[in-house]
Length: 323
Image (cartoon, rainbow, N blue to C red):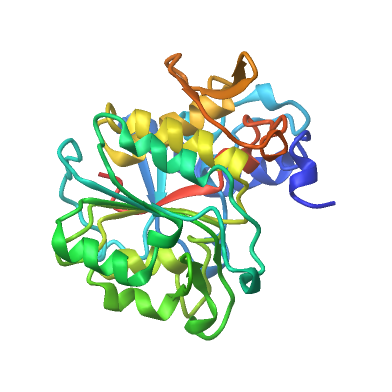
């Protein structure tokens, strides 16, 4: 049975609860005594692909309501190492946003179209972000470099396909409109000069890595000077990415730190406070504060996703500084 086919089940609960007992329960008394609000995990190779926010403290492996997910108690993130984690607080209130993405790709890329990408980028055109957006044919490596050189963007958002493959770093890539940004090219992009405060990689497997590429694209970006990177642990679907991003940026304008913005977005999804609806015949995304985001997309690109399932919200993880 595929991962997607399990989104109406709680088959993940036994493993989720056992991992909670191993990894979190021994520290729980200390965490509560010290009123800890954020957990930053630095873990070994075999644990880096775990959706830690979805660990569950319940005792009944058949009853989801018998306990809470870790993300309901703490904001959660990963780091390649404490030494590489920027501990300074970063205020995003005046950060300029560069948003780039594609919905169509060359036939020889073998990638399906992403009909919700343009809608996702349009989120960032609204106040307070007022992003500079570049779509499809404008989403090139040369343009990405040029925009970064011309203006000191504090946030970079890339919405596209990506693929991580073990072994040679050149085998893993982020798909641009007409070319591929390979994992081994990340170091040459100068994302530390001026430093990016936040890199959002809205694509598949951007936080998945191996021994040679710890935490994948997100981990390498963090190592090259990006303060915080939002990436994904497995293959994501557009109908889940769009709601998470809509709620994340809505929360980012209000939350004290980036990790808390992600936490609130994930909680809103698991508690069904973010949902799809219709205004007449036009689909819309409804955020937790009641804000509605109408959009145009083929009906079969959305369906009726169970957005409260960890498959949709636990795929995203924050790498690097939680602040």
